[in-house]
Amino acid sequence: MELFAVIKVASLVAAAVLVPGFFLSLGIFPKKTDIDITERIGISFFFGMIPYLLLYFANKNFFTAINAGSVLAMMLAVSVLGFVLWQARKEK
Image (cartoon, rainbow, N blue to C red; front, side):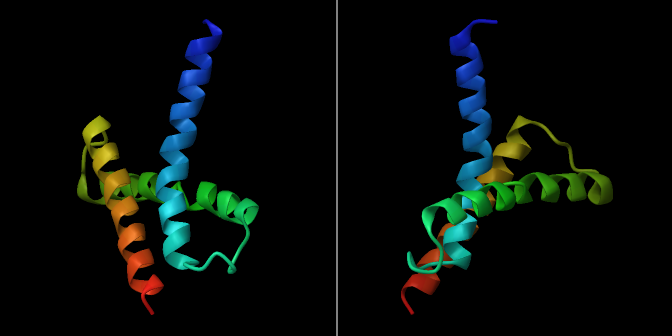
């Protein structure tokens, strides 16, 4: 496997975990002074697993198929939820 392909796959996996987690961390800790950037990135990796855990739960209990479309939809739903929560909490 060439180096470019490895870097591309590693970047996509990191983005697939970081993006939803980052939006959720913004929703939970809306101010910049709540946590610093290294803590936010660490929490983002932890929260980034939530869409996949929700898909697994839906698959086992409601027989929902896990495919590229459902993964993308769940990532988008969790990211939008975190963004909306961040906007609502930021205005207070």
